[in-house]
Amino acid sequence: MLLFLLALVIMALGVAAYAHYNPGVHEITMRNYHFAAVPDWIPVAVAAAVPLFFFLLHALYARGRARR
Image 1 (cartoon, rainbow, N blue to C red):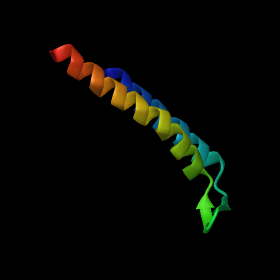
Image 2 (cartoon, one colour; image 1 turned 120 degrees about the vertical axis):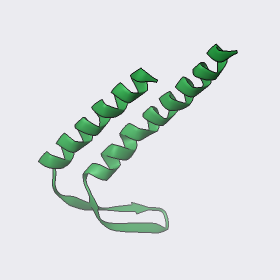
Image 3 (cartoon, rainbow, N blue to C red; image 1 turned 135 degrees about the horizontal axis):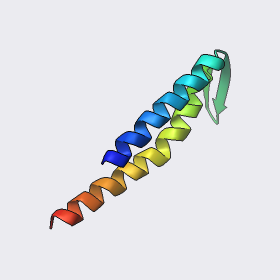
């Protein structure tokens, strides 16, 4: 779990630095949905959160197996 927290802090610092240096917005269109004025850092945060979520699931599973 300590590694997950370290990865979370590194991801937050990376996204914060990206948001600081890229303050622009853009439009995102997905099939039938249209999002206007999305800050540039949101897709970066989502892309960083997906593998971090799987890492958290793995850490919780490994913690549960180690307690048995």
